[in-house]
Length: 147
Image (tube, rainbow, N blue to C red; front, side, top):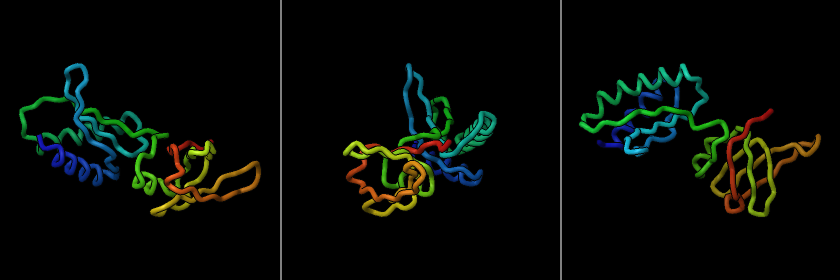
């Protein structure tokens, strides 16, 4: 099984369907092999089912190995952690939660991302404030839901 070839084919198919591939990995759970496919989108069960059917067709064409496995298609989650600078850059314009190493916490709009820092806008009572936080000062960052 060529996981890179599979990942490329799945990413291409998802792109044609209007979605973005977040992750593909082969897992083993209780002696069962599972091809874990995470889609970066907000999807309901019907949409996941349709996407799963389409990806299954792609796998039938691309994966000619005799190895058996289950296909698990799911979303990355509404409040997923942003683990890399690339993840953070993709989240520009979205609502986030960030905790700094000096224990400050912000629920904010991620306005700008560059190589060294992020720029956020948040409300402090009724006032809109802006702040820059260097990547070195970020302890934890994730997407958040604005209520």
